[in-house]
Image 1: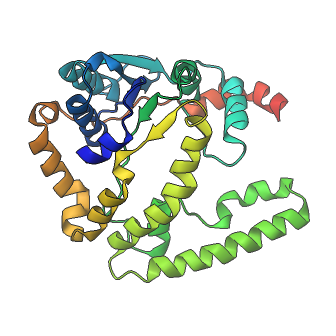
Image 2: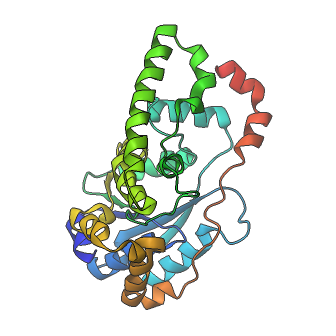
Length: 288
């Protein structure tokens, strides 16, 4: 992992790191701390919405940043303009990326990140977690990697040209059948999850999302997706991958002070989108 971080760290430029309250981002932060000469070169940030409730990411992330000597900023994820957020998603997501709940955060961070092509944003998503899908069925395994049947969007198809909707139903159904067979072919559904995560969720959800909302501003680096790291993860027995067991043990041994800071159980406080839609119903109707 250290070598993977080092390969992605340029000799110049500002270093941005997205800190959450979990295991992965603090590990990346820890390796950066060993590699950068000046901790003030690192800009750490956490996006959040509204007043802190419970034990959110922002609190744990701030403690991690302080331990490493990094600057840390809490960025408002949603400024309260639903129509503006929808429009920003439409413009950046191009109709192909998942909805970005924190689009206002990237709008705020983007100008500074794009000041130099030497700047880099470090993110952290670990593959190979051996997730046990509820029920262990092919359908439940596929749902854990963001693959759903055509029925998910059936109510939207009436707005398409009949020829286009029929083509979408056929193509979606054919691909769903293939993926269902692939998911069913793994004796252990946890192994199936890991392979399908890399094949489907990583490429069709996460990477595409980053290409639309982050990469226009800055080079994005995820050290966990280094070929050597992924190969190692997939070579481990499933029991060591489950719940990130071996990873958590190894990284806590490497950075005991960082991992003495409690993990945030709550994640970041996302907007209440149902409330936002009700409150802005007329404006959304006008937009449509």
